[in-house]
Image 1 (cartoon, rainbow, N blue to C red):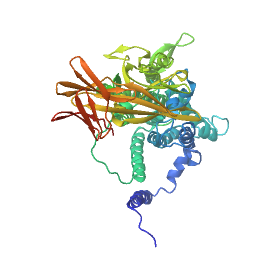
Image 2 (cartoon, rainbow, N blue to C red):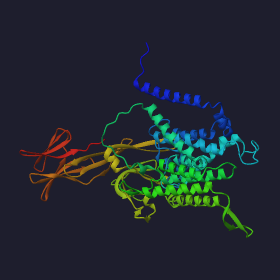
Image 3 (tube, rainbow, N blue to C red):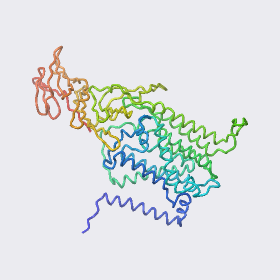
Length: 554
C-alpha cells in the first residue's frame, strides 16, 4: 500500500509542477516553432553556451578537489586559498575560484549561469567580424572559441581581479561582475532581467532544499551585511567586463543600445548588486558606510559607460601621430580611455599592499601560539591588524592603523595574517573551529571560551586552544569585580590558566580560592560561596547575595 508523501515532498512537487505549467503555457502562447533554438544556434555551437558550462565545471572542481569540499561540503578549507600576497602564488592563482562554503559557491554559480551566457552570446562562437570565415584559424574555429577561448578569458579575468583586489579576497564574484559588464554593454535591460532571474533561481533552490522554515526571535551576532562585500573587487570585475564589452561591440557592425538603456541598466544593476556599498573598517568590529557617495559613483559610472557605448566615431580630440601629423581620436575612445584610467585608479592601490607580506613580529598573545605545519594560531586582544596596518595611510578621517581582537592565524611562509574569529563572535558562540590546510591536507584547531559574569561588573574569561591532544590557555582576561559589597568585602572573579578563582578583598587584605563546582560550597575571606547551577552566591550570616553567574553562549 502506497503511503502519502510527507508535506516537504508535496511542497517540492508543487514548485516543480508550477514551473512546468508556466513553461507549457509560454510555449503554447508564443508558438516559437524553433525560433528560439535557431537564434541560439546562430551564436552558440549547437545552441549551447559551452564556455559557461566549462567555467562552472572549473569553479566546482576547485571547491570539490582543491578545497576538499568533496569530503567536507559545508566546511571547505579557505585560509590558504585567499589572495594574500604576490609572494604567495598559490593564493593568487586560486582565490578567484575558491569559496567560503556552499552558500557562497551556489550564489556565484547561479550568477554565472544567468550572466555568463549573455556575455558569451554577445561574443559568439562564430566570428561576426567582416570578412571572417569559420574554421580557417584557431581564432575563428567555433570549437576553440567555445571550449578554449571563452574559458581562458574567464580565467584571465579571475586572475586579474584577484591580483588587483584589496585584501585577501576569495570568490568568483569578480568574474561574475565581469560577465555583467560585458552583458550591460550589449544587452543592458536583458542583464537586469537576468539579475532578477538569478534571485528567482536562488529562491527556487531554497524552496526545493528547505520547503518550510520555522524561526523565532532570538539573539544573534553578525557584522553589517555590507561589510562582507568585496566592493573593490566587484568594481574591478565590472569595469574589466565593460571594457571587454566595448571592444566587442566596437569591432562589429551591430546595433548598439541607446544611452538611456545603458544608463538604466547600469544604475539598476549597480543598485541591485550593492555597488554603492562603499565602506571602511575602523577596527574593533566597527565599520563606516559611505552610502550617498557610493550611489553617486554608480550614477557617474552609468553615465560614463553610456557615453562610451552610444558615442559616435566622430573625432573629439586630435593627438600627434608617429609622423607628427594630428591623429583624430573618436569620441568613444575617449570614454574608453577614461574607463581604463578608472580601472587603473581602483586597482592601483592593491599593488603596494599585495607586494607586502604579513608582519613577522610578535602576535601579541599572552602565550606561545599553537603551531601546525607553518600556521601559528593564538588569541589576542587590541593588537595591530597585521594585514591592514602593513602600510599606514590616513585619509578622509580614516586610517589603516587599526587594532583587532580575536583568534589570529599567521603563516609567514604564505604571507597569511588574519583575524579568523573576532572577539565578538567568540563571545557569542563560545566555541568554534579554525580550519587550516593546503592542497591535499587539512587540519583544525578547537577554540573555546569560558567565563563568569560578575554581577553589576564585567566578565572574567579565558580562551583555550586544543589541537591533537594538546590544550593551551591562550588568554586570560583581567579580573572582574562584582558590584555588591558583602559584609564590607569586595568579590572579584579571576581567570587563571587552569580555571577560575574567587578573590575576596577587604582593605589591604585579600584571600583567594578556586571557584566552587556546581552544588558545592567554598569558604573564602570570611564569606561562604555556593554554586547553584552556575549561579554563585556569597553568604554572610543571614545575608545571601548573588555575585556571579556562568557565561552562556548561543
